[in-house]
Length: 393
Image (tube, rainbow, N blue to C red; front, side):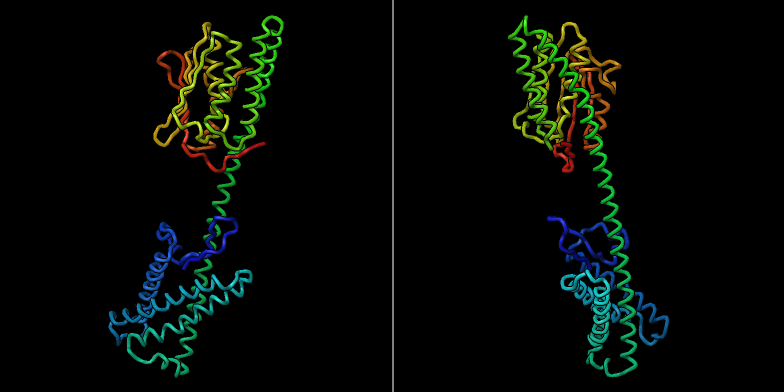
């Protein structure tokens, strides 16, 4: 006894009526289907038949054995249940819910009609008699109509209770999604705010370096300015993109390292190790850049002779593993500082919070001692990106 109405959103299915058995949590574990609904109707009708059999034995049917009375009642109850199942399914397709009173009245009449038809035909099936004889006697017909009406009203009340449960469940799911979306939006807003604070420092420092090199080393100043333009172009694309790819994130990190490479010269070496076919994998934007900035600020710049940064990516089961390895100063107490100094990157604690907002427990950031000296920052992301990633223009 479960139906669907045309969805308000393309591709969505909205349940408007549940089976009475779904009021019991145990019966909510199986998804609706024709076979399941018919089985549930048989179970529901059999339980009702058992209850009616017990009541008949307690109040006046001592002349009939319990087994025979139970068999008769089960046949009648299941015949009525199948008729009600079919009638309610037909109503869902033919009668609009726009006028709810008319719809409820139609349900009551359909259930009552199924009861009026099912009781005489079920008894006739067992006894082998003409079912029309039930309609020949006024008292019998009156009792039959009263019973059918009571059954219909009780059944509609059960259906209303099930519909209310569905509405509450849908509202709860909608509220939870709104809370999750608000959390993701807040994480993205924090990212944009941090990015807006950090980029001016990098901008001013780079332009100051270019200005100081124009007269003495014009070729070097030109090269730095060209790479800086490449970085700005990649950064602008990343900030406006709804989704990013691993390849685009690597391009952004590469442009950033190119600019610093002009300034740091032989103190900075870097390369990318990317497994084939991974460049097009989707990922949230601006997750790799903070790791690269952190490696520069805490690893390479404080070290007198500099070092090397290696950015690698590979599949690890159902995860995308991205590593930023540096040969800088190594793990120190200030590596996880939540506030970056001017020119530094987003704090790793902020990055962890953003991962939690985007992927929950499905993603994590690990910091490991690099055997070659320095630090390995390992980012583990699910291979699928949440569909509700928020974009802030």
